[in-house]
Image (tube, rainbow, N blue to C red; front, top):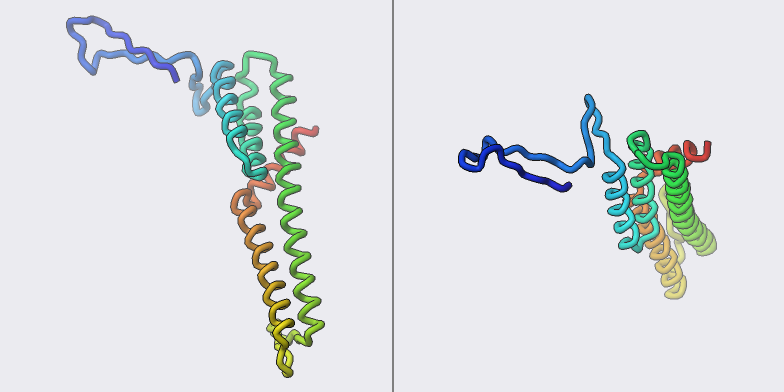
Length: 188
């Protein structure tokens, strides 16, 4: 924020008599901070710069979601066209939800596909599932080719699971549910 210092009397100035004035970006009323149009536009520009700098699609979705939340929270203090700001916030919320949903769904489908491939391979090689959920290897030994295929399938499953976990770390379930609720609110 812009800050301007003025002094009451130049000869008797001390750090205790200095008055600090801030630019009209925000004010407080009770427990809330009200941000004026200049402040909202400035913060929106910061979000826009963060969004342009980010390359990961899920992180971009989270930034859009945070931006939409900010706009919805402060649309009442906006001195410009509030309907336009609401529509923009709604499009940000909707796009954030759709991008996050697509990224998470794709990662989940890749993990499920890798799990199915591993299960089919294990059944084909004679692995059995015990009552306690453990997997019992076949009594006859596995060939080198079978061991390599099994190792590759397990590696693919680990990679898909790690990718999904990384995406869930970027956008945890509670944030995704908030995205869904905000997008639903925006569509009303």
